[in-house]
Image (tube, rainbow, N blue to C red; front, side, top):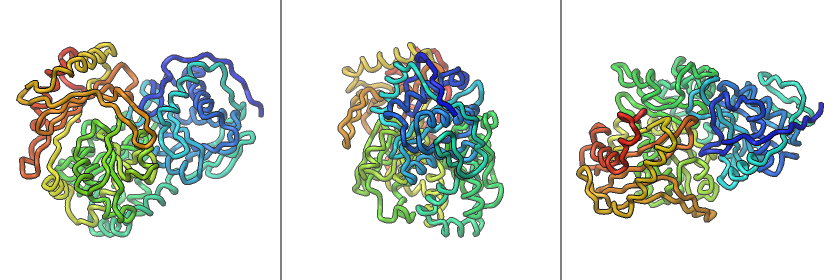
Length: 542
């Protein structure tokens, strides 16, 4: 086989976002677009010579073709070995685990996470570093620089590899090992959680429903919940990964997980419901009639982690993304452990995890995880919830009520305004920030502004600074509004408005969140001038 050198020119817009490069699928399918970005990654990590990589994705449209291209490029760039999930499938947390377990130099993960899949939908590619976590900003900056200066990429002219057959093969001189995508990950989960206690709970009649949303976690959930833990066959629904996710939106929230939510709010609801997203790193938790917000879930998992064998000695600390509610901060304070607030993007947790400063991390966008990998992990969160339920022998609703009585309740919601003209979204942000100096003491919608700022993060491990990570408005009494432009969309701009209102443990803990947040919503709209968006309301409210 021979190495082909292809002359190329840069494509505009190959700047990685909070989790790699995401574009419309047809844009990725342009001749040379994927190859340019992949070569830019190889160049940014100072080549692939003699290195080992992990490659896999969530199975969305163009996943298989992109993997074949990356394998041929890895071989042409001198890689010695690549581990690939069978049929090209690997959940993002499983890929992170494989990088760490087998000492790989990094991994290529093909996914647009919770975004829809299909030829007219979204695709993505990101590189995870040797610690198993998303490339840090210093590395993504190098990728961007390489993408803006690229003049050539290389690839082998070898035939495609059959990714359906387990075992070892070669592509030129590069060893390719096609592995079961589930087995290593399942073994890791068994080392962290009390599978015997969970198995006994299922044997005693405990009922669960898990919606895999026709995404990558289907095979993982079927193996772990039904085959290993003994949950009733059919516990996992929508369990077959499809290139278009069954024409659904693989985002595990009440808006998109309609089938699951309808069952869990119905008359004969199972004892526990959960879902995960396109690439398996996010989760939804719901009990009969009781939705658990991601911010609350993070706090409950941190407060009860010691009930699982993998965390029996306690946790070192908790980290949350800035837009996430302060619920986990209250748990950290009570436990006497460190609490960290970072920008959005799991990559910001990596240094804290590597340094042993925190054990559990989470984001309001339904991502939760721990130091077992360097990614958020949807099935990990579901299994920790099952472990807690098995030990405490209480319902989800009872556990939530007990938690709120101890710590108070942070009523929370996120309002998304999607596909906005970029100049309009940026205008709202710039006008709001320009008003900050005059805001303290201002009364609006019955609330008094205590302070306002543009969030900047100073990494306590490496001393790096990340500025302009979102606008925060704090109100007296514990309420807060945050506005941030998202980096995970593919069309226009997405403005996210995060709303929080605190109620003490002896207060009214059973309000509808949107009712409890009414004054915060009104204040945020008035202060930010959201009417200038030209929308009647948010596109998505979670």
